[in-house]
Image 1 (tube, rainbow over the protein chains, first blue to last red):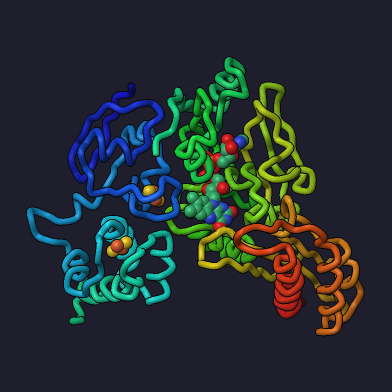
Image 2: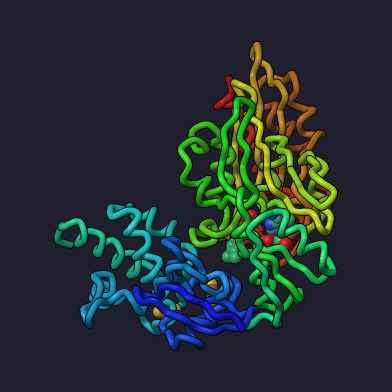
Length: 158
Length: 289
Ligand SMILES: Cc1cc2nc3c(=O)[nH]c(=O)nc-3n(C[C@H](O)[C@H](O)[C@H](O)COP(=O)(O)OP(=O)(O)OC[C@H]3O[C@@H](n4cnc5c(N)ncnc54)[C@H](O)[C@@H]3O)c2cc1C
Ligand code: FES
Ligand code: FES
């Protein structure tokens, strides 16, 4: 067992994990942050996307032990005091989800993109989100939702 | 999906890392860089080491340094750093193109340059770039340091000439000679997938004739390969469509036995090798001076 101290969704957090457990398992099992999903465990689907020390990563491909001292942001920290993040609102308004399993990963990845670049082209959005798979929506509505959010964040009406 | 249990160590210096290697059965230890190839293997239990030795905290293994002859890239430098580097993008565009073709944003955020080289996937972009640039690999062990040339580094599927107990510390990337044109082509079903086949080409044009042409393929054999027979067709030839056709046929003949799998048949890969090497070389010719 390892004792890990990290900042998770803005809060100083401590948890115990097996030496060999992934950050994804630690989030879901030790911290009950089940918003972060497991689709594949091989880096292919992006359902487990979190922001690790400012960078988008697949939580299934990071060891929990590596989180010592790190800052981790998950989908559960995106809304603030019950108010949805503009991305979450646009995902609803633009019908960018159906079954919803992929949605946490898309939200985290898209948030990270908009923090890097608040005026991405459609191509840049598609390039950045290429690591997130959705089996339901056909992607187009997701891309629209992200572009509409970007426009709102820039102060343009969408 | 959960890995089989293992111990985890995160040394802070190379000396400490080599010490740990020395104290353990080398067959039971796995070095971990970005984990973007190793973690899937652990999760699927295709790898079951008893110790994972994390290199992420070892000092001095990351970063890009520029020297007059080229770049020195620490083995633990992530692809993100190369992708975001203006120096790489403007001065080493072939390396930059090879970088952005790898996986997706999160994979490039974590995956390292050294990890891709040691992983030596036959369909990976970086081993091919290593052959295109004549990169050099600096490895450390308890016996000291040695330098391996790219042409001796990649042995076969997922195998390099690094010995157990050795750690790759640095990759030296020479500048291409002035006037060198370059081309990069790959075909994958979706962006970010491993290539079905890819081709890198470089060439100079002197007095209207091709000089030092180089063709490297990935996804076409058990490792990244140069195609000397194709290169020979171009040396001293004019940079024309006719020369490219002759070269493409030589590449087709040289790629005798490519992989055949669910993504593509051997015949298709062979034909792709011809088509993509011609396109890459045509780009290289148009950029050469
Ligand atoms: C969804 C997905 C898509 C991908 N697409 C591509 C792609 O299109 N093209 C591509 O090339 N790759 C692709 N990859 C692989 C990715 O680029 C990996 O990051 C890379 O292959 C390994 O780098 P790493 O730093 O993650 O190494 P790790 O996974 O940590 O290690 C890989 C191997 O190298 C050894 N190793 C690592 N560093 C050292 C060192 N310094 N000294 C000695 N041994 C060392 C490890 O022991 C291990 O055996 C993809 C991966 C995923 C998950
Ligand atoms: S669960 Fe991590 S990428 Fe699919
Ligand atoms: S909404 Fe079902 S997988 Fe994306």
